Image 1 (spheres, rainbow, N blue to C red):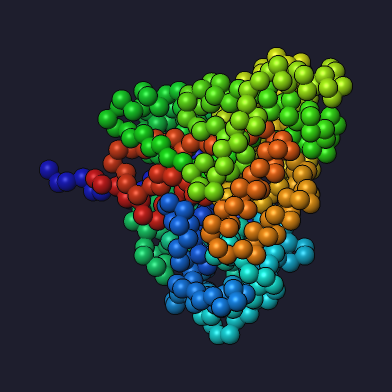
Image 2 (cartoon, rainbow, N blue to C red):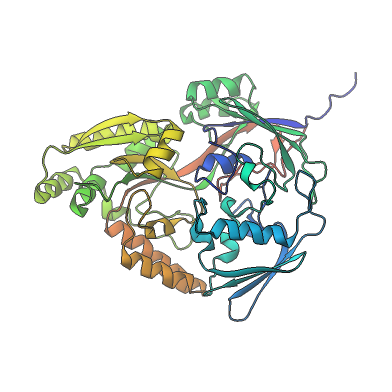
Amino acid sequence: MPAMAQRTDIVVGLVLEPPHMDPTSNAAAAIDEVVYANLFEGLTRFGPDGEIVPALAQSWDVSEDGLTYTFHLAEGVTFHDGSDLTADDVVFSIERARAEDSVNAQKFLFADIENVEAPDELTVRVTLSQPNGNFPFNMAWGDAVIVAPESAETNATAPVGTGPFRFEAWRQGDSVTLVRNENYWGEPALLDRATFRFISDPTAAFAAMMAEDVDTFPVFPAPETLAQLDADPRFEIVVGTTEGETILAMNNRRAPLDDVAVREAIAHAIDRQAVIDGAMFGYGTPIGTHFAPHHPAYVDLTGLSAYDPERSRALLAEAGVEGVRLSLALPPPVYARRGGEIIAGQLREVGIETEIVNVEWAQWLEQVFGEGDFDLTVISHTEPMDIEIYGRDNYYFGYGAPEFVAIWDELTRTIEPEARNGLLGDLQRNISENFVNAYIFQLAKAGVQNADLEGLWVNAPTQATDLTQVRWTR
């Protein structure tokens, strides 16, 4: 009997369907979960444990004053439509992202760029207005991938990148399929085909795994069934860390949430461990600020907002607010829907009447994130080291305090690691002491995969399902 051929396809389960396929024009993590490193590439990229490694730029030099970065591009890179990648494409991509009319969700990544030019076809020179030790890190984000002028405007529905996979099909409401790029400039993918299936319902996700209709669910939406899957030799449970700060975001612009005493009362009403146990079956790490506990600069500030319902009631009384009624918008992920139910119950215990409003992902992005039309919402921010968002006065929860911005500006000018860590600590304390949001837990990367798969990320240093090293062992 001939041996069975080794599989070269994979079906990946994801909770959320992306609103479109262009990571440079939307904040949805679901886009990067499909396209990052697979379809689109940047000058640099995140490795599996968060290190910044070369991508389209094989190397780079930094001037002594820290103001000029010279990137040396890989040779022989082509886009999926067959056109050559040149330094002009990089200049176009950066200028497009930082333009005044740009719709890039993370324009701060490009804020310190003063000039970008192409001395030759394989060299890009970026001049900054001030030294920024974060710059190679910034260029690794999905929002900073390199696109071509010819296809940039249609990437939302017909994405054209330089990665080891190319786009084949999108069945709206069901799946996206990528196929191997046979003309890839670098190390070729080991898989021929990758299908991303979108399954938000926990029961359906469990059924799909058990039926082997899905080969891996990197962030599994039914943590209560992981023990059952772990006992099945067909599967392997993989638990790692993420950059996902799960928060109860509060609209700081809207009364009564514009009163720090009310925000503090809400924070003290929440029993973090009860949320972690009830919604995530113990998978998650309590946090007291918007920063990942695995980062060396993390400061444990959970004590500032410890569970203390009596303190909550006293603060509400001192603030002179009675009969508070707030709406709580909950997008589809399990941490939000299940966690939000628990949080709403805890808020009611201290006298804050909380109306749950379940919203679909597109509605959350438009209404909550885009328009800032909400009271409370539960969301996990999965972008890497993204505390900078608190300096944006137009950001959806509406903080942007001048003292926070001043610390951030000092951080961007600081290169020395110990000094940077000290300033990162100051940023964490600023938002925690002002109770901008209620900080609940760091999202664990609790996933399940076929036991014969290898090469998937254990941790999630960014929102990605990197398939570049994935293969079947039999």
